[in-house]
Amino acid sequence: MSADLTFMKSVSSVNTTFIRPSSFYITGLHNVPHAKYYYVFLCFVYAVTVLGNLFIMGTIYLARSLHTAKYVAVFNLALSDLCGSSALIPKLLDMFLFENQYISYEACLANMFFVYVFMTQQSLTLLAMAYDRLIAICFPLRYCAIVTKTSMTLIICVLWILSLSVTVLMVALVTRLSFCRSTTVHSYFCDHGPVYYLACNDNSMNSIIGSVCTAGLLYIPLILIALSYVCIGFALQKISHGAERKKAIKTCISHVILVGMFYLPFISVFTAAVTKFIDTNVAMISIALTQTIPSMLNPIIYTLKTEEVLQSIKVLYKRTTVNSTMETVVKKTVKT
Image 1 (cartoon, rainbow, N blue to C red):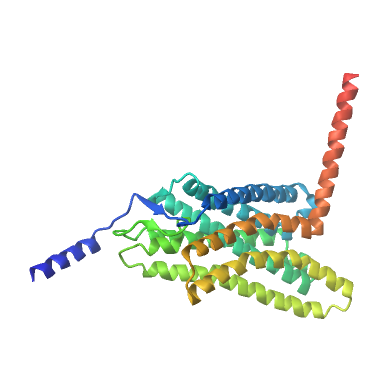
Image 2: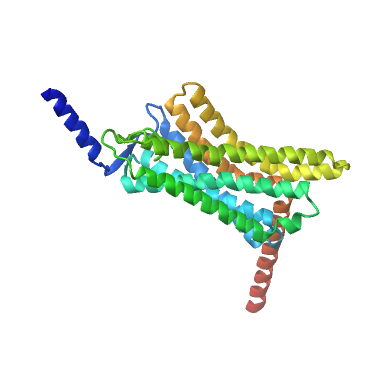
């Protein structure tokens, strides 16, 4: 009886004591040979991501021809890609290249917040871009009246509010958890699932919000994007002229590629994790690349696949060349 009483007291003390750790330990890849080459590759990915997205944002800002509703969404996607990679890769490199794998409790929550808010913003921005293409092809005569810069800016603002609100709620629910056992996070950043699994009090609300976020911010946008392209497909069948149909399809190609690159790897990894066992290292590498490679390739795809952007780049290049030539001539004239 005394032993049982002692056990009950110890359980009661654990349940009533709220334990907030000073730090977490992020495991990263485990027993992977030459893992540093992978992190060096991520350095390259990050450098290209920063340069590419700054380039596309600068082009949209400087080229007046790109000051349209469509490119408000493209600019927001580039911003989300840039910030999302900046929230993930530098900290990841600091932890695993320089072996600083301990992260403070507050820094862990901040890392979780920023990674998730920009990842959800990427998903929702792709949905906004699908809406733009849907109206442009299905209601071409009313497009300029429906999709204006003001309306698209309002949509983007609403999406930011949604992303921030959901992510704040998700992170806030983590603060109510007590970590009385392990503080070792089996991931490559302060991932929501691996963190709340460590709690020794009730984490059912965290599980629910995790499922809601995955469904509402990943699967539902993908379903809506797919439905929009079904409608676009029906609209294209009604276009009698082949040239017009081809032109309409070309305006969608870049977006379809972006959607495929972003959603398919995520869904493949999540589905495989549910249906069968996946090695932890394989899952980490797959999801990390899924979060970083699309952000690097998005500006490249939009630059190479979109005639409007290519034309704007040529105009800006010519303008810069002319200005530099005129400056040189003026300097020579002043000297003489």
